Every structure is written in C-alpha cells, then in structure tokens.
Amino acid sequence: MKKSTYLILAIVLMAISVSLMAQTSELIPYRKGDKWGYCDRNKKIVIKPKYESADPFSDGLAWVQINDKWVLINREDKEITKCKYDFAWDFHEGLALVQKGKKFGFVNKEGLEVVACKYDEAEFFNEGLAKVKLNGKFGFLNKNGDEILSCKYDRTWDFKEGIAKVIENGKWGLISNEGKEIIPCIYDFIGDFKENLAGVKLNGKWGFIDKNGQQIIPPKYEEVWEFRNGVCLVKFNGKEFYIDKNGTEYWED
Image (cartoon, rainbow, N blue to C red; front, side, top):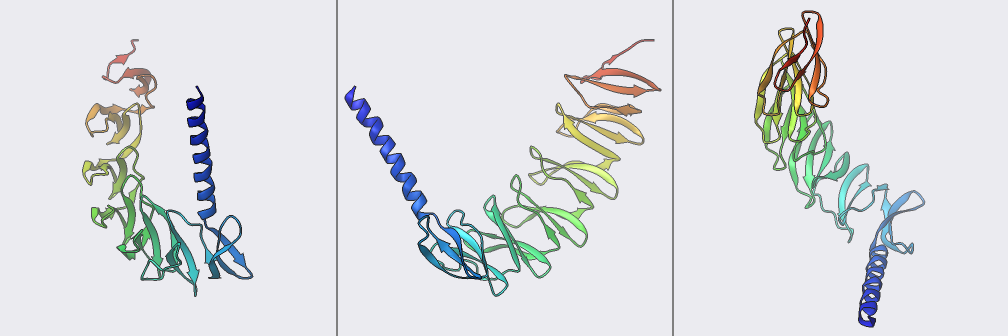
C-alpha cells in the first residue's frame, strides 16, 4: 500500500516539475517602448526587443516584423526564412501562408518556400489541400505545391469529409481531396449532403446523388427537401409526398 502511495506521489511531483519547466521555457511576446522581443514567465528577457511586431511562438517558431517585413525566427532568434514577406499567417497543417507584393505562397517550418508567391489568392490548408486562385480561376494545391486540381473553376467550396463542390462554366460538380473529379460539372445545382445524399438539379428537375457521384434517385421532381430519418418530402405534378432512399414513393389519391 505504501509503495503504491509513493509511486503516485512521484508521478504527481514529476508532472508538476514538467509543467513548471514548460512554463519557464515558454517565450511570450514582450514590448519595451515601441519595440518587441520575448521574455519568459518571470519576465526575464530572452530575445532583446528590436522588432516592430512579434507573434507568439508555436512549435518553437514565431513570425516577427522588421523594417515592415515579416520573417520567421526560432527560439535562438535565428532567421529561418531567407525571404522577408509583406505578411505572414500562422501554420496550418505544417505550412504557413505568406504574401509578397500582391501574390501568395506557402512556407514550411524549415523556412523553405514550398509554393512560390505566384497566386492571386490562397487559403489555409484544409484536409491536406489549399484553395488557390490564378487568373480569375480556382484550383487546389497539395502540400508539395502540386496543383492536383488545376485553376479552372469559377467557384469552389471547402472540403468536407474529402469532398468539395465546384462550379465551372455555370455548372456544378464534385471533386475529391485526392484530386479526382467525382462528378463532372454537369448539374445546375448541388445541395449539401444530408444522410449521405445530396439534392441535385438537372434541366429543371430534382433528384439525389450519393458521395460516389452515383444518381440514387434520378432528377424528376419539381422540388425536394432534405432527407430526415431516411425519408424526404418531394413535389411531383404539384403534389407533395414522401420518398425513401430507394426512391419508393409514399402516397395515393
């Protein structure tokens, strides 16, 4: 019983010690006059205040501003990035969005510019991909900087469970985060997935597709609502009734 108590006490003391060490080693942006540096929890200066602005450290790295440009530094105050940027954002999925002039690119935590600043717009990485815009069209990059979906879409949505909606020449389609076109842009509209089915409109009629792009219920209805508990309200020839996911219609005159 005593051994067990001592063991628990030792674990608690170790946890407290680790926590205190982490707090002591933590660097916090510290302003002195109009300059910024970093201090520890005891307000001891670790990096001399010399920057115009300073972001908090994350994974041992922080963005700082000097001469109106942003550069990435480590805890030893060493510059990691070779280039200096007009603006920089936090890391998302291991890469940080950066801006040079009016163009956007990405750098990794080694300070290497994985994606050159050549895009007109760019968003943070999500599910392994980043949305970019070039010459008025949208596409997607992977973390190697490869355009796995070229910039050809008029509009794109964020990925949800590996699937995103896109529009090309006024028509809607679906793409995967593997760079594949699940459905070519042929529909007039694609709704959100509910219970693994999404409403689609084609030639003025509504039906449903699954996440593989298969037409589960062919477009023939004047209106459809969302599936709830396996059934969905639809309108056909002016009459409303329910259908299930097999397309079975529940009604009679």
